[in-house]
Amino acid sequence: MKLTIEQERSILTEILERKGVILEDAEIVTDVTIDADLKGFTSHGLGRFPQYIIGLNSGNIKIDTDIEIENETVSTALINGNHRFGHVVAYYAMELAMDKASENGVGMVGVHDSNHFGVAGYYSDMALMQDMIGVVLANTEPAVAPIGGKKPIIGTNPIAIGIPSNKNYVSVDMATSATARGKLLEAMRKGEKIPDNVALDSEGNPTIDPQEALKGSILPFGAHKGYALSFMIEIIAGPLVRAATGSKVTGTANSRKICTKGDLYFAIDPTVFGDLEEFKNEVDNFVLEIKESGDVFIPGDMEVRNIKRNMEKGINVDETLAQELKKISEDLDFDLEKYL
Image 1: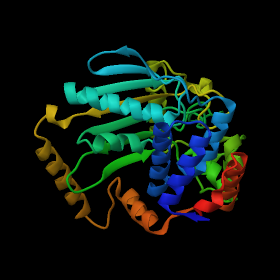
Image 2: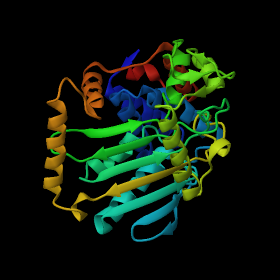
Image 3: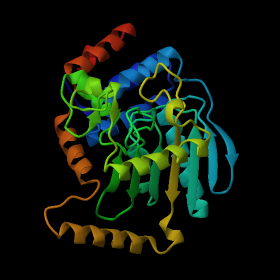
Image 4: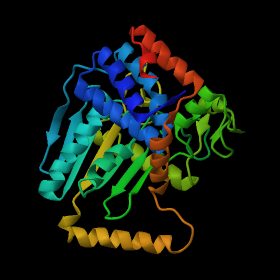
């Protein structure tokens, strides 16, 4: 099955509203989901959507709680998401960080008691589009074993950074593991193997079987360097923001469990350091120097290419995922076919 962006938007919004989600929240969740699919992060887009329905059904994703600011200064805030949709909490947090940055040059907002928020780069893009630098850090439930170990203790712990420019989309959104856990789930759903040098089975042996990898652990990217970065993010997005760490983090992969992970959102206004246009021109000059060095990409180029292709050709939906969406629709007495 293949969906146009308009079809995907209509289907997801309709399903969420039928689950009692208010329109404003439904539109944010849908927008973030589509953003992931357009950029090619399908494991964090429509492929993740059935887990959100499980979260709603289990009561671990709340639709009627308030997002609370627990602590606040002129440039920082700590938010209790009260287990609303992670997308909605993250959107609120980055907007608050940008408001503080516009007043004070920098805004930093920590979050606990939220939920899986889709693709991290959506929120760094929010800052980028307001001519600010955006940074997002988060921890996730254990998937990565420490170097030399077998037991997964650390999350895939993503980092996203967006930088404003006049001519280029300058953005990175990546897990600190060799692959995102969602990629393993997607491969298992599709009956596909995973690449070499990505994961270990429960005995610590290399595997290309996603099911065995999920029982075992994902390797950190860049060996000890990725492990060290993920370790640090675990703390910055954990106890710093009153969230869990290590084996105590739950609910990001299995939405039948309450989510205990944390996030940290930064917004930086470049004008506190100098002229905005000068900064953006320097970014573009650096990009030009990189691109003139050969047939090379910058962070963000792959997403731009994927967005163009997927806008034109639509989003592929594998048969297993299509059946999951049909089952969700049937349970809600919702005619999916009318949108197809």
